[in-house]
Every structure is written in structure tokens, then in C-alpha cells.
Length: 231
Image 1: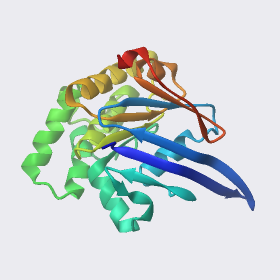
Image 2 (image 1 turned 30 degrees about the vertical axis):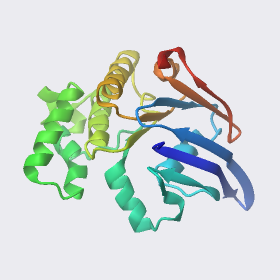
Image 3 (image 1 turned 180 degrees about the horizontal axis):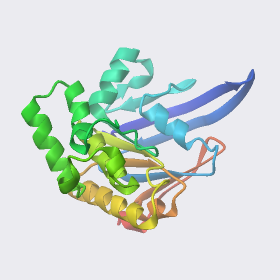
Image 4 (image 1 turned 90 degrees about the vertical axis):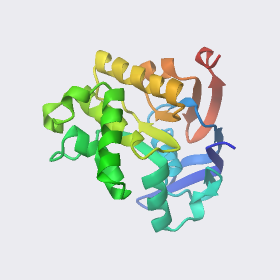
């Protein structure tokens, strides 16, 4: 069973009373373990699609299935629970809590899940080791570089044991070396742990790593190709 299915997803916004179509009849299936880049020019609908897949926005029509469950008809409380337990998010702006250490930021989602202190601690340490930040786990975000903060954000996204991770322009604020290091880690987690990653990106560095590239234009899927990396 695919981990994500979208069926005829359309999203229409109102801009000062004028309807604007952000997505139009988008059909996709994404299997567990994929490493997918969604690309396209600004305004093509990339972030809107990720937000709808992640339950942060609802389509005007069509439906989204996550692990076989139709999330477009879910109550808001059920969507919150789904995001907490089954979906990891990595944002361009990191969104770390400034008063918490790196380890506490990774632990926070597990605190919301009401996991035990010992489980939170060991899981956070394991993930920070995986993203090569073990020695910096007691530092707060202001004491970390942009690349280090984004690696904390990746560890936090994985802390809940999600079905997949949605990464919206995760390398946009990073220099080349930091972006390369982050992508190395994500590829390793995908390859060794089977983690599913779906990127929205303009970054050719991300596209070069993807095993599948989905191109949006004017809210429509205009191409969906497997790359040489998929073989």
C-alpha cells in the first residue's frame, strides 16, 4: 500500500475576491522508502501540495490518503493527532524552540506524545548521533550554525517515528557544505532506515540526490520521472 495517495487534488484560494487555482487535479502515489523531490517555479503549487499532504491545509476538492486513511474528511483534532504521530516536518526556517537545547528540541515532540523520560532521552541522543551532533546536544539554537540547526530539525522530525518526512525548502538557507552534509544524512537515513522523504525545493543539489522528481507547473503535474539514482 502506498504511504501517500492524492486523488484529483484541487486547491483554490481567494485573493481579494478573485479565485486563484494553486493546484489542479493532482494525482500522486508515493511508496514507503522513496526519496522524492517536488520541483517547479515559484507559484507552481509545491508548498501548497506539501501542506495538503501534511494536513496543514485542506483541498478544495479531491482527497488525500495517508497510510490508507482519508485525511481530507478528518476532524481537526484527528489531524493534529496524525501530524503528531505519523508525519515529520522540516521547514526552511528551522522552527526550533530558542529556550530549549538541541536535545530538548528533539525530545519535545515525544513529550507531546507522552513518552517516558528515559525513552525521550535515549531516542533524542540516538537521533542527534545519527545527524552528527552528539557533542552539541546541550547547546541552544543560537549557539548552533544554520546547518547544525537544520540537522536538529531533521532529528526532531524523525523523533516521532513518522511514516514520512515532508521537507519544505530545507536547504534554502544553507551554504553548499552545510546543504551537502544535511543531504548526506538524509540519504543515509533513507537508505539504512527506510525513511521516506518528500522535498519541496528549488535547489538543484536536492534534485541531484532524488530518486524521483515530480515537476509542477501552474498547479499541475507536468512530469513525474524516476532518476538514475533509483536504479
